[in-house]
Length: 257
Image (cartoon, rainbow, N blue to C red; front, side):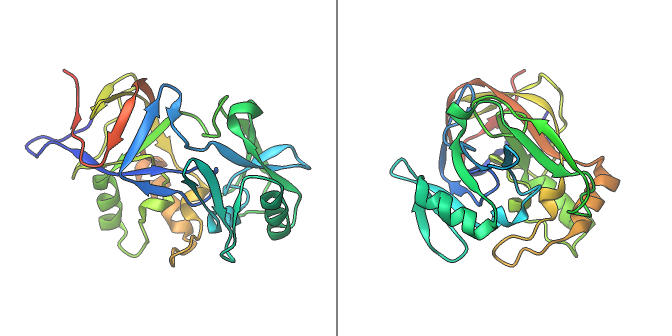
């Protein structure tokens, strides 16, 4: 459960949505949570046509240099050169030219269960690839929702102040504003505003946390080395959505008795 003895009740500090898997996402004031996940989150992915796998920044780190957002219900992708495209053939061509491989952007709702890949050794991108299957209907890796607390980031920053503990390294949907961390109890419930979630497990971290990103976020392998040595490779938690609704920044976070 969320630990907050002797402190003010935690609240939602920030909300995030990532329309295209592994591209930069959106920081929003409100998110809609459906039973199968955050509306508009990881709705699209970049399919590597030759391998038949959906790319992520675990395998293709350059994806983090692109950004995606929803504009009046329409997907817009901005490439590193500043050019913007809607979903369609022009976007597929531009992405293929940039990445140097034939790709196309596919919709998770109609694609089915995707296969993802990651280097076996996070310190060497040219190491053997490990494959796994995602969930149906979304390009999330495992669960519908991912959250952490500001306390998680403060603790890591205190332990290794020489590293950049930017929230974007961890790609959560929800950041709970609390000085304390999360004690993950599988099956434990947390209410966030009108939404209720059920914790699944602690979130195992991967090579994504080490990747360089726009805004002077450097490649830092020590981020994952430290998390692996000190925190069993885990930061934050994965969850399912038990009661749908809207989340808003500032909503109170409560634990049912």
